[in-house]
Image (tube, rainbow, N blue to C red; front, side, top):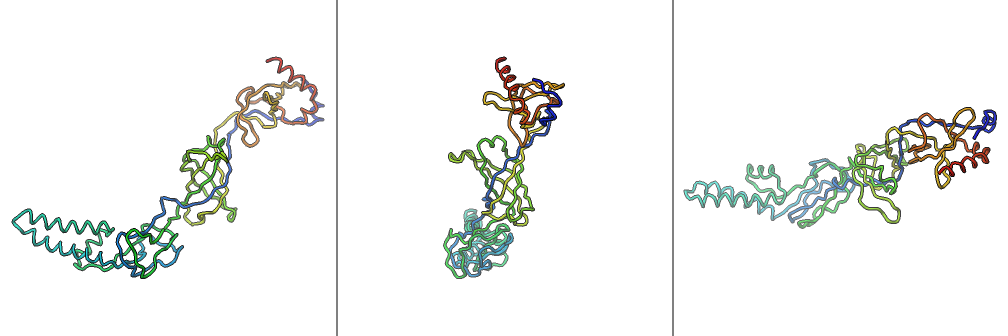
Amino acid sequence: MQITPERQQLIGVKFGIVEMRPLEKVIRTVGRVDYDERKVVTISTKIGGWIEDLYVDFTGRFVKKGEPLLTIYSPELVSTQEEYLIALRARKDLIKSPFPEIAASGNALAESAKRRLKLWDISDEQIKALEESGEAKKTLTLYSPFSGFVLEKMAYKGMNVMPGMTLFRIADLSVVWLYADIYEYELPFIRLGQQASIQLSYLPQESFTGKVIYIYPSLNPETRTAKVRFEFPNPQGKLKPEMYANVEIKVHLGRKPLVPDGAIIDTGLRQIAIVDKGDGYFEPREVKVGAKVNDYYEVIRGLKIGERVVTSANFLIDSESKFKEAIGALGHAH
């Protein structure tokens, strides 16, 4: 079909070029901040007794790695230490025996008492201090295994504690997890290690960068989404569990031949572009396009790099009769 340059100018024909461009897809969703499960610890005791000193006395307090949490007075601990000291003294005497069996029995008694202490999480340093001092300690001190915040505190001064009783739950928030739901059709674009950024409603000017660490293996049958877990560094503690965040994942698909989305006419049976052949001549051409990203379609076939295509809908309206004729001819050609 042909339209004169004057007519083109009058109806305001607009053109676009088929060109190689970097193809980038942006996936947006909402996520929820949570604790890193690997960095949440339960503090309990393996011995019974009474809490004599409580150093961490409120929920939410920050504790440093190695900081004392509480001390427990335990008669059982005292008696086992005394047994160990007695066994050490006996070993010194029995090792001089000319009978190997007697010498070995003294060593076995000492090792048995030492194993009991280690089963109660008495450290090698504490056992060495016991050996050097020769005096049993009346209390056992529990220390924080890492720096973090006290999530739960079930311990009170003077309280009777039993083996296995939970006394504290502590979480390290220097790294947090974030859970987000990704639609089924977007899952092929998500991969492990992929970078993601989030923004919080109360800090709109600030962005946080993390990565995908796990893609759940099943879909929610109602929402047709899969849960994805992200990991975010949180050195300043601005990301707090149960916060909601806007998540953005940029997917770089490489350089692809792209055509402006306004150039593609979808008739329901096929996709057509109007190619400018020059000198006022236009060719309707059947094409195949892929995913739409932003304002562009990826060209699969039918268009060449550098070809000029019509992108203005008013051109099609003005040339409706000619356009229908050309489309009809295109259909008969098949």
